Length: 157
Image: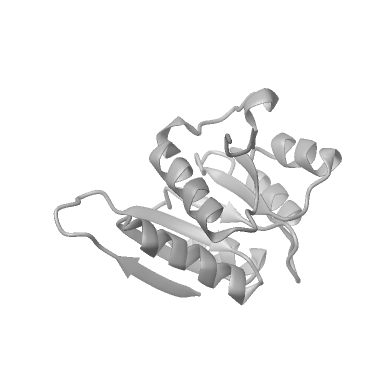
């Protein structure tokens, strides 16, 4: 697990984010986009679902948001979501599926497993920044249960 902290002077509310993704380049771009936005954040990065679950089991403070890739070794995102639903059902974790994968069946399954939002990873850095800005600014609105009509996120043109 890697932890990165960025603070802005005069901003009191630091966004606590967990991000599980096996791709180091994707984790780097995610972190760079948050830094570019100037958001006050604490980012804990994990290479797979096992590491994420371990951190959730041993952290005293809940993250505000969890970004979860689906395609990871050892324990993929779907397996991780299923495990979280079983092992910590009473916690109000805001899990955002953040992936390049996802046909309609996968999207429905992540919804069934209580993810708060399904987002396809943007391929453009500026789209990534806009997506993260929207999600972090509207994080308080992501509660469970989520209607399926509001479950998938797409930037408006």
